[in-house]
Image 1: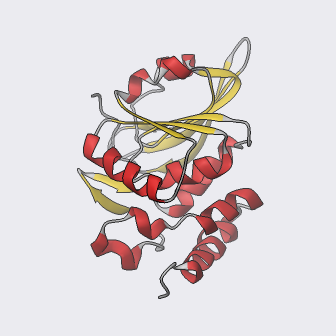
Image 2: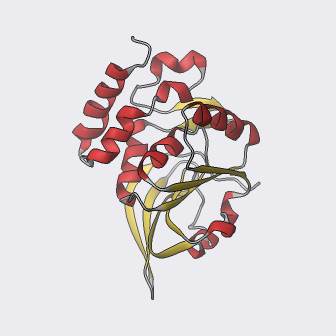
Length: 210
């Protein structure tokens, strides 16, 4: 493997993401650019571009690349968007979002994880990411409303406070369910109603309160 793993990223994008139907060129370019190996633990670097999640400590994971791509693709992120991310985790998804959107506000409940993510993201020179240690269920009201919200852990039902912080015509994607059975839902907030679309079955760590 070469030092920047570009060949591995090209293979990941082609076979894991593009071949599964994701065609958004800006999204694919973001996955080509962001060095996933920088966000995994040292003993997992050889598996950084593999087609499955990896542990990052504290019973948390860095998601399978395709799932990150699928969720972001469903949000249809625009360059002018302000995004709220619930669950900084490794910071990998945060970096992909930062490539696509104007501003990313990211929340984590585990301080050590976010500190590690900040170190990596700052080393990669991102300047449009804002960090906070707080309860994801409460969101980050100070900077609401958000055009898009992405939740990287599974609550048992849609957190209403996060819906409240979503802009009109905004979208939120969230895994809903218990430990063993979850589905992704795409939430669309309209002026007079909130639409809820059931997507694919997934497996995420549970969303916990701070």
